[in-house]
Image: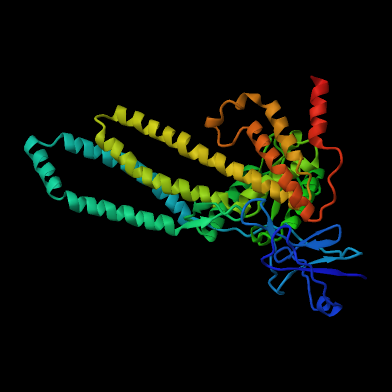
Length: 433
């Protein structure tokens, strides 16, 4: 059996690959282990391959060095090797008391801020004139001490914030992460157990045809992206929920939930794969830890603002209105735009994951254009949504498809079908119109 070995240098880039031919003695010393936790490459049509994407999204591909040998090898065999891989398991239960206690503390702190601010306002208004003037003079005499204390606290907050800045995998965008991986895993496992209770009796058996479809597509996505440790090091589970909801989501621990209503929105397995790739990209990018970190940190800061509102405003009615207005401003100007940014990033990375899994990436544009036609009422309310509009997503993905096709070709995937689904969809709409 003829074996052609190509050894990639760790620093090679797209379009600049050094090919090395080695003797059979080198091949005999290489052991490739087909395990879900340490698989070095993806097996598609008998080819074992491994890729590591460049630091900027879809701008190039660099090679991933193996743990056991100096170079990454691509082995091309005439006869495919049969490899049995167990992907999906049920993980053990975890408890998340520390983080849950933090959430309870935050709720208590908000209530305490309102009560304390209200009590301070009543105390201040009830002070006699001479007492109020005396306090004012004391504050003026110690203004620099007070300012120094506030500045010190603010400086400590900045040090904590910048010491927890990390970069997202693949896109290298800087973001704030307050939770470590274990803390996130604990709280997500509790959420997972709650989902199992909520969907009890609705989860389809593994022998169901819809479950088999999801498992087949998911396995292809996971195999095609084994160069990413965020995928390689996780134990994945699949749950198909029999509910008429057009949605799917993936928890950060690798628990996949797909609702049967989603099958009404996709026309083929390729589109379903695009949706699942988008959801898995949230796990790769660790968006859940990012959102929890930012929003919890913001809520703790807003407790001070909340207390100030109730302490300064003259009556409870104005304080209630100001609190509501503050919440809406934060939601519209920070929370929702930030969520839309994460969804756009997940679209980009999800398209890359789909390309490496040899899916037809052109179907991504078709899917979101179809979604846009089926739900036009939400297109004008993007500022009130946590997601970009369907038409915006379709246009953005259209710009990325040429790059994704190049990634797909570099991965050694089979050529795309001659019939472009985008052209087919356009012709169908023209005939119907």
